[in-house]
Image 1: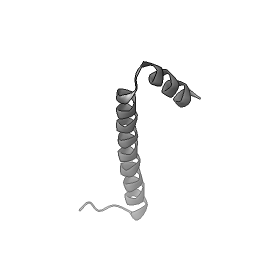
Image 2: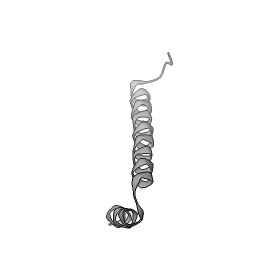
Image 3: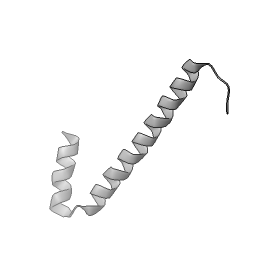
Image 4: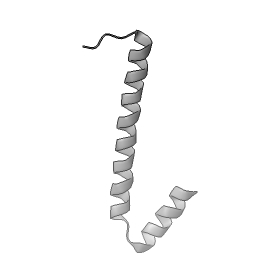
Length: 50
């Protein structure tokens, strides 16, 4: 286990969680985009862009 001040450990843990959340969100967006048909794609793109 790495030794570091608790403030750095907290910041590191928060960064790891943020990175994992962003990966999950990107995967969800990619999955939704892959499921959309042509008209659904346009509707989805407008909703995301709004």
